[in-house]
Amino acid sequence: MLSDRDAAATIAVRDTKTAKNFYEGALGLKPVDSGEDSVLKYQSGGSTLFVYQSDYAGTNKATAATWVVDDVDRVVRDLKAKGVSFEHYDMPGMVRKGDVHVAGDHKAAWFKDPDGNILSVVA
Image (cartoon, rainbow, N blue to C red; front, side, top):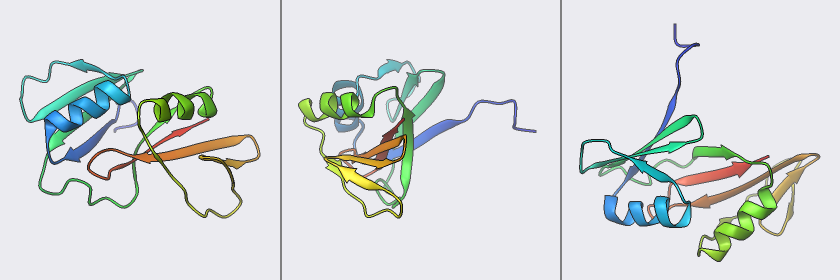
């Protein structure tokens, strides 16, 4: 039923102006007109990211959105240069090299938006 349909990440934030500065400024996402002031819509590759105002912003304790990238180390460097700080987790089978978690050929890094939503980049 849904296997041939696109899925979208939906992230709750307290303030869309603050979120806009982060998602557009730090992450470099390009906005798409959503037609609403309380909802920001971004195209990211072939995916859509909705950022909306909610009293429940930042309450998710798991990863809310993940970007698959070619070079995690480069993306981490670029995001750090824009003021993004990274989370460090103890994960079975992974070792940490700076801000990047590594397991064989798999690399991942986690960071939070201003509301505490957990986001990641992986390769």
